[in-house]
Length: 90
Image 1 (tube, rainbow, N blue to C red):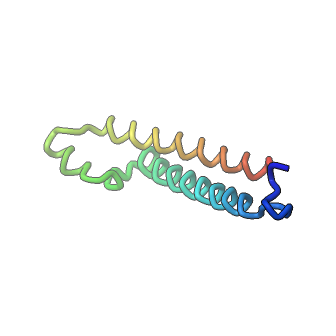
Image 2: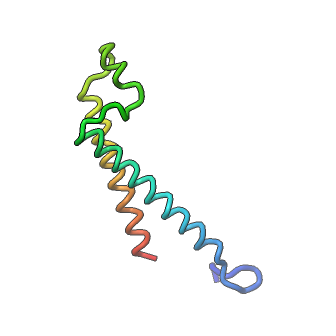
């Protein structure tokens, strides 16, 4: 009864919203994983906005860049796994 609309028909709008959520979740997860991988493993610190200038000025270190890359990588993996689980469940 909870999925039926006022006319007694099944509400298809909820499924569309969930599909959009899954697509956004997977896209953001893959993007975070990609950028985290490039920053942490490939040492592309120029992907961090303003890092090179801050590093030259002594405000930020390479350890900071590595931690940013690692955090992005882990969050990206978590979001991607959640998206995959949501697809598998429904």
